[in-house]
Image (tube, rainbow, N blue to C red):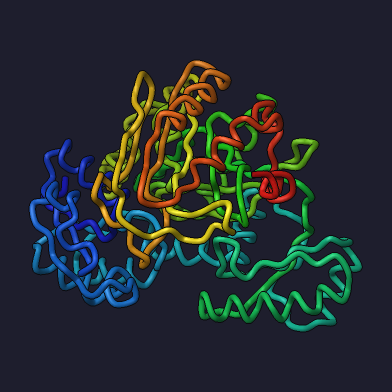
Length: 449
């Protein structure tokens, strides 16, 4: 087992990793930018090292500075968390070339699954259905028009290196397909330095269901059940839950088994998430693999009782998975809401500033994962999420009632947050009935005040 780990991230996920390491008796080195210097969560680390100015490109995304901090801190491994460099295969390669273990998948698996075209090929080889579409990257408008004529509109244009909705457009006719190809390629080039795009049949009003997996270095792979992440705005998740509501048991088992087959086919190790869309007839289609821990991993932890961060560390150290598939439970219902420093009634404009008052809800089955506190200054430099409120109850209706009570109890003053919108979603009939799809909130709720 590692004696000392560097945490190459910040905020909530950095705190989550620091806590897991402390429970395991592992020393930690935390990195920070100048903007985060002096943050309370850094006190949980054995050592903290400043790696650059506030801008992420000059600190949390600067590989040479993180490696220097790791060498100064004399660590055996680096945990990247999520975001930043967590899915950067070059970073993983540099870590290992410096004899520092990267707590994540192999470079080869990251490379194959990080490219959506390659990932679709792996899925086909594992007999996991993908959405009908192009076999590879689109080389010309003529090719795109021919594919659209074959599979029919609407068509989804997607960046092969994309994520978070960037480099993605929906085309409903030839004209919008031509325009969308150019726009998606330009956006992808700017965001990912890769202008490659491909086409998929656009599934109207789909659900987003993802399967949490973990694999050790000895060929063992298990799933930790599924999460439903259909409550979204512009492809950004707002509410996650497990188990997925109104999903027939046979479909649930099939989608989890498909995820395991795909991960085995990719020779993948460590934690990851296999993402699917599900249509109104419960047909499911593979879309991508997130080769890292997810923001919503606490939902899975609550229903299984397992610590995913600690298990990531154990797998990276070469340990065998401690349980068989049949031994992994899924008890009750867990839900997570992401609380962001944004104004949902003003086009989700960011709301940086000082938190002048903070009262956090509690009670049975309530968990709050956050690094913020009263007096904390939310800066403009990073993601707007300031915390995750998670509940776990015997039934879904009880979980909804608990979340609503907690959000009513929550007090955050000095900044705007997404709490008012979350309250509206939890009271929406479609959500209560388990009938949400990925565009429901934008189509039906954002005009409501």
